[in-house]
Length: 242
Image (tube, rainbow, N blue to C red; front, side, top):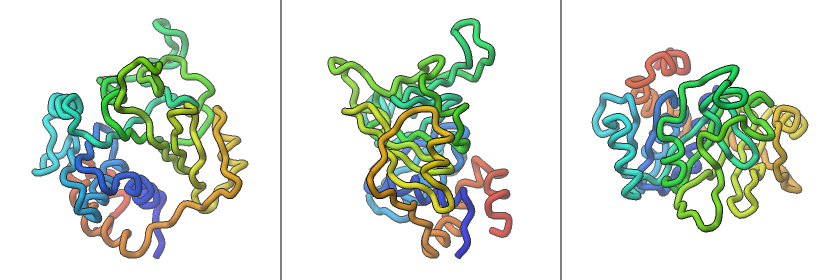
């Protein structure tokens, strides 16, 4: 069965979420939100998915207040972060381009990203653009640090990075990304050409598994109607006939 790039990314991210109890989803995250919903549909162990912007119970989240309280109490198992820039140590820049404070371009800001990055055990980084503009050798400004000194209490941090070309795992001991797989139709050369930081490569590079017919059916029939509440335009674009 044919699938879209969005469906591939949804299925790929969901693989990191099975077995977790509470998955929280922030703003501007339709693909991670769909992945969280897919994980809940497929895994009885996923008890709760909270999505900022959803008006439906039990997915509704009262903005950042609920999210920050849950994270501070250790009751969020997975969260998602993106950024204008991400470097090889999983540092995230949500502030802008250029030397702070006189930056050439200013973005919306971190809005608690560093707090969640420190507390949520499994933070999955995600970008729909894979380019050297995004994946840089060193971010211009660290809005949320990927690694911390050994004497810093930090139960949370980066776990993986998923892009339209591939997926990486993050090794917290080596403070480096490790290539997990490359999506069908892409190559290691393409990943290298579009990535500004160094990463480890396995001797044999797997191809990312395509979503099965059963998974696509769940995405289109179970996930799509729910994610359409906070993200109607995304759902209409991806599943116009559902």
